[in-house]
Structure formats: C-alpha cells, structure tokens
Amino acid sequence: MRRTRLVFGCCLSIVLAGLPLAASAQPSTGDLPAFGAPAAAPPAVPTTPAPTLPAPTLPAPTTPTHPYTGYISADLVNVRCGPALYYYPLLMMGKNAPVTVEGEKDGWLALRPPEGIYGLVRKSDLTIGTGATATVSAPSARVYASSATATRRWCVMATLKQDDTVQVLGPAEGEFVKIAPPESARVYVVNQYVAATGSTTQRRTVPIDIEPPKSEPLVEAFKEAKRDLRAELAKDVPDRDFDAVAAAFSQIAEKAEKAYLKNAAKQQLAYIARRAEEKADYVRVASLADQLDERLADIKTRWAEKQADAQRDKNLLKPDFLATGFLARMESLEGVDYPIKFKLVDQNNRPLVVLKSSAYDLGKYLGKIVGVGGTKTYLKEWQIYLVTVDDLKVIEE
Image (tube, rainbow, N blue to C red):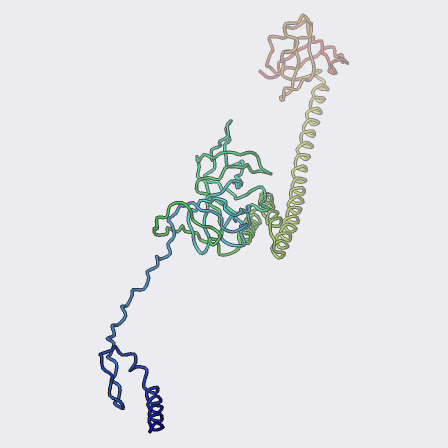
C-alpha cells in the first residue's frame, strides 16, 4: 500500500511539471483548472496603428542676389580676365580673401576687380590733366585688363565713352597708361571657389549677361589684321601705310601661345616687309622722274638765260648804238653822291650796261627804250660795262 502511494505521487509530479507555462502566468482567481482539462486561452491584446509622421521639409538651396560680398573658399584660385579657361590669369587669390560678386553665368562669377588689377588705355585716347585724372578724348576708348603678374594684355575689361573721367595710376609700357578699373570693369572666377557672406536674405538670382566669345580673341585679332592688310593693299602703292597692321601682327606673334597662330603672324610680317620694300622702290623710281623734270626745267632756264645774254650782246654790238634797252634808275645808289645813277635793262629787268652822262639829263628818259652811244668802259669791280653817253635816241616811248 505504501509502495502504491509513492508511485502515484511520482506520476502526479511528472504530470504537473508538463503543464503549459501560460497557465502558471495567468492571474490567480483562487481556483486551479481541473486536472486534465485544457488551459484557457489568454485574452487578446488590442492593437492601435502607429501614427504616420510627415517627412521633414528641408529649405531649398538659394543664392543671394547680386551684388553680394563673399570670400575665396579654396586655397588658391586664378582670377581671369574673362569667363573661360583660355582667358589669361591676372592674379591669384588665397583662401578667405574678400570679393564682391556682381553677377554670374555658365559656372563663372563676375567680380569687381580686386586690388592689384588695373586697366591699360592708349595715351592717344586721353587728355591727361595736371592731377591724377584724365578725360577720354576719343569717341570711345578700350580698357585692357592687366596686373603686375599678367603676361598678356589683349582682353578688354571695359569700354569708355568720350568725356568719361578716369583715375591715372601712372605710365605703362609703350603707348599705354595705367588707370584704376572703371565702375563697369569685371574679372572672373569659377563659382565653386567662392562662398557668400553677409546677409542671409534669400532672393532670386539676377545673372549678368556674359557672352563668351565664339573663338579665341587672338584668332579674331588675326582676322581683323588680315582685313586691314587687304585694305592697305587695295590702295595705290604710294598711299599704302603698313605701320599699324604690322604692329597688330607683331602683338599677335608676341602674345600667341599656340604655335600655328604665332607662325601665321610671323609669316604675315615677312609678307608685309616685302610689300614695304616694293613701296620704297616704287617711291624711289617715281622720285627719279621728278628729279628729271626738275633737271629739265633747270636746263630750260639756263638756255633762256643764254639766249637773253646773246640778245644783249647783239644789242651791245649794234652799229648804231653801243647799247639799247629800258632806261632805269640805279636803286642801290639813290641818295648817294655818285656819278653813275642810271642803267639800261632788258625786258626781264636784267642790267645791260650802266650809264653816266654830262651831255644828257638821263632822268628825263626813265622807262623809255633808248639807244645810247659814247665811250664804253668795263667796270671790273661791278663786272659790267659803263657807257659815258654822248649820243642818245629814244626808240620807243
């Protein structure tokens, strides 16, 4: 009997140990389920859908309106004279250097020229006063971008009108003077290297109209110089002037970095030199004709003089008179107490002989054509004959 109870107790312990854990986790009601009955299911937990949260709204990227201040955000940046990589650099700006942005287009920012950049203007386009200012005297004047480190100077940063006033910084090489950049002058930098500072007001961007050239400016300058050369060659040879066009090709040859353009400019200079030599030869030959004309005129003059001398000699050798001609006063001896007061001259007022007379009042015959006779004496110091008149006849009143 005792063994039977012990076996029953062990079996009951094993059965109780196999009951589900959920039954033991239910809140106590004071009652246990009957042995062998299924355990009651736990009550369902009510579910509430999770609230849907709105997506975060991020501010749209904006660009400050122009002009605005900024600073260089890269370590070193090239500031160029135009909005493309083939425009020559003017200077380099370092990180945090301040700039003033005036506009933008196609990835380039137009800046107000920073310190170190200046303009070059031809002296001939300006009237320079006594102070540090000058006035544009030409209808228009180009301002070329330059700096102390710029190796080229063909880019036009601004164009001035007549009567505009500029600040003169000093003389420059050749025909140019340095001026402070005018208000309309702009230089350029890639926009990703500039960060905006100052006002955070977000407004619409106002781009400036930057129109990149269709080709390299030196190529355009070469084409223009070619047109000028053709215009000079169309003129008559003596009127051709190659100085300006030769200067244009010389600048292109000096500034061009591409070999084909540099060589083309040099070839044009060699061609111009040959045309200039041809002009010099033409002018020299033409001057020979002028010299020949002058020589012929001189020969004619001398021949006429010889003819006049021959006629004068004939007059002196006339059998009726020692000399014949117009009777005139000796102007150089007027007011001088000298016996020789009159002379005979031919129709060109050249003296034939000089006269003195005690037999005639020669002053009465002034302006008349007379023939004279008497004693003839050669005056060596005057290189002319003197006739002492003792016979006079009026040939023509």
